[in-house]
Amino acid sequence: MKTLSILGSTGSIGTQALDIIRANPSEFRIAGLTTNRNIELLKKQILEFKPKAVAVMDEEKADELKPEVNAEVFSGIQGITKIARLNEADTVVNSLVGSIGVLPTIEAIKNKKSIALANKETLVTAGSAVMGEVKKNKVTLMPIDSEHSAIFQCLNGEDIRNVEKITITASGGPFRDFTKEQMAKVSVKDALKHPTWSMGNKITIDSATMMNKGFEIIEAHWLYSMPYEKIKVAVHPQSIIHSLVEFRDGSTMAQLGLPDMKIPIQYALTYPKRLSLAGKRLDLAQIKKLDFGEPDFEKFPCLKYAFEAGKAGGTMPAVLNAANEVAVYAFLDGKIGFLDVAKIIKKQMDSHKAIKNPDIYEILEADKKARENSVRAIEAKDF
Ligand code: MG
Image 1: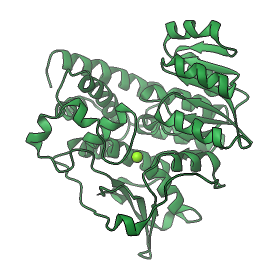
Image 2: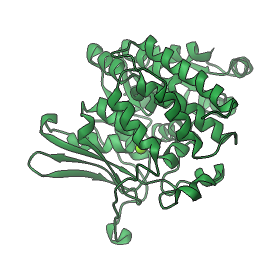
Image 3: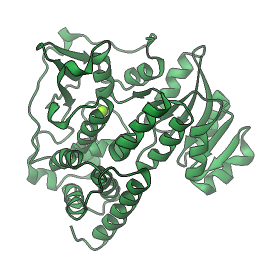
């Protein structure tokens, strides 16, 4: 039996992870849960899963929750980090959104927890430091993302030195066939309509700009020690092939499935076991055809910036991520247009001199500066 703490249990990945746990009560127990501020849902989760402790990011909401539940209630980032370190848990599911997820991951690893990682920012901003801690503490880090789960499955039993190329597939998002002129005018509602995946707001916008794919390139680089030259992106609108690995003998492995996040979530939680999972099954005769194309780096500059930031290394990916995070929320708030997101990121990257081999504090400092500068640039409409 595994004992889990879930960071971000009220979000899209967190609730789906709890669905899997509910369906497999003899496999899992819950030690801790956290939410940003959704205490109504957290209350229900506490009643059902009986964690020892929970954390609420929002201090006021944490105070509101305290008298109402039979669990220890912590607050703020310190509270979330406490849940990441809980003695009772052997595995931490990190489904936090944003670079707020970095420190709890590191704390969990230092406390010898296995990690099931959905928080992209952990590896995007601090890949070198995090993978260093994973090795040092001899813990496993399982990706929850569909693409990295696919790559992991294609690499099962293989020698990484035999890999010639990794191809990460991308749906292309809702604006795949839009012109730049059309993209300049899209609304928040348009950008939140993802054609194949159902996900949280932040990641759905990242998919529309294709920054999400950019993050996945950087994550793949760290997870599988793959140089950027060996990582490709293929646009595949149906999201059936989740990624491919090509070996030196010309053989290519791919992992397929209907786009359902529960598959990679469950695999990350049960590996090396596979458990039954209810749901529709892939029927190729019904799908009939799968399409593929090259990504358009001019139309989706975020993808290009991610490759550049990854190759520049050091603190540059943290700046890419921080500027993106601020810009995406500004877009969601109606403060900037869709194409401005990329401009804000470019400006921050251009003005940043990457620090080589940064420690976690230098990374967090670069993150903070880029965030402040991005907020200022948006307020002054200077990007
Ligand atoms: Mg993905």
